[in-house]
Image (cartoon, rainbow, N blue to C red; front, side):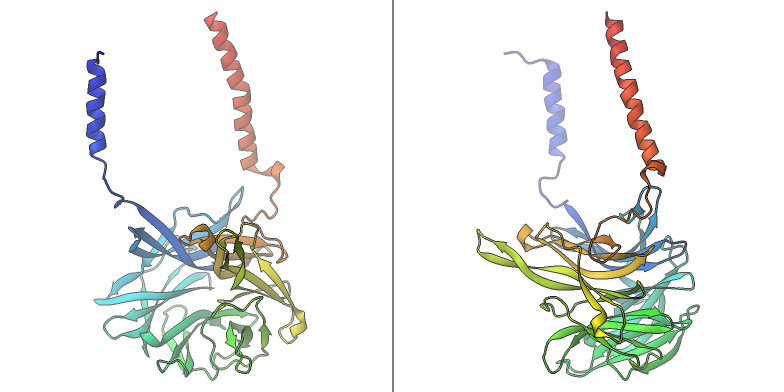
Length: 414
């Protein structure tokens, strides 16, 4: 059997190339995004912020806080990752101090998108707040700015949220004062939106909750949170509002989640259809594996429409983005509206039935709270969309040119 020199040379080159490949999986890198917050921006665009982790060999090797512009294009409402912007690395150094981020929030006021970060000041061990802002829907961000150092030990910090009261930014944070957490407080800050200087610092007469969100609507700042009933030991979602920040001085309504199996429902709220729509997470035990004889428990999203905050009978309940593809878990929602539709960003993860996975930020839209879609279509008209014309023209060209080319080629051969 003879071997040509050309063939042997090819084998030698192939062996050299193959030997340069790494012989382990050390170079395998994964990415995951979670902790979404969505808010309106300028010019009918929306801003998303989220945490973005780089993972190698099952270890997080790099953490970042990023933003994404969500906007209407000729063919779709763009929510997918496209030239996302780095806001800041998750852990950073500020004026020589080592800072570790923990939680974030996003608020839009006076044509600016503000990002606030609750952090641990490593030197003092206390809770500190930093902020930055964007005037172009997250395409660029100002340098990070220190806002406030608290006297709260970071280990006792629970949660925070930001909205606005009148023309000022309004920040509230909750914490415990003993290891068992039996005594808890909420402190509030009002900030000048231009300088970010603290104008007022006070303790609220009411505790906002362990997982609360703030939402300003018609001169009131609404507070929605998980609330444990002291008499029944069952958790519900409490919705109230504050006009001063120092107390919950508005009417209160209690919303009952479908299952009540999670410690925190992480509710999010938006004004919708002359009322409010609240979306939260819960656990559901409905995924049964006959082979293993195991009932899996996964997160799902639920919604509640409140027509009147003073009347419990105006509450109607909805299942949010729960489809037939059992095994996926959906949690940590952030809600807004776009042209009358409910717009939810959330964490989507393969559940235990599918072997588990890493979270990614996903989106869903609804016109009525009952039917949900992954893509906003709005007033999309197929016959008047430039993208459709381009697609039809491209297909048409191939349909005409390709047969002509094949026929002409056969004629030339003859």
